[in-house]
Image 1: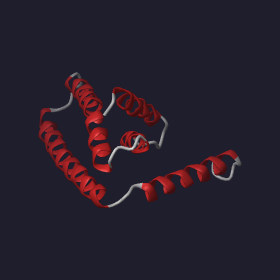
Image 2: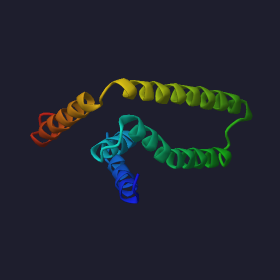
Image 3: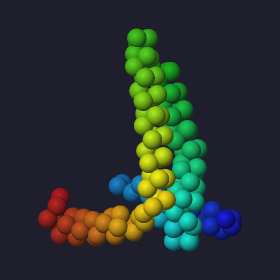
Length: 128
């Protein structure tokens, strides 16, 4: 991977600021357009997400530590964190296995068509 490719994929994360745009989807798509192999694109996309996810989690933890959250709620929070982490691991593992065998193009086409439909529907007032 060249520095130029890494910068382009990193900049693609900006698309996630648009409501409904997936951070991992935007980086994965950018990497695929740069001719990354599907598995490499997914791996890089997930690695790019680690700092953002970790910092968002730390920010939320900071907020929780500075609120009057009752002590009996902490075990529930920790349980939720563990379950979410395990679920994320299996979701990433499943996506990596999927990408070993299948292309993402049907999903890309679906998202593009849905986007065009929503833009037209909202701009014409059909969908407010």
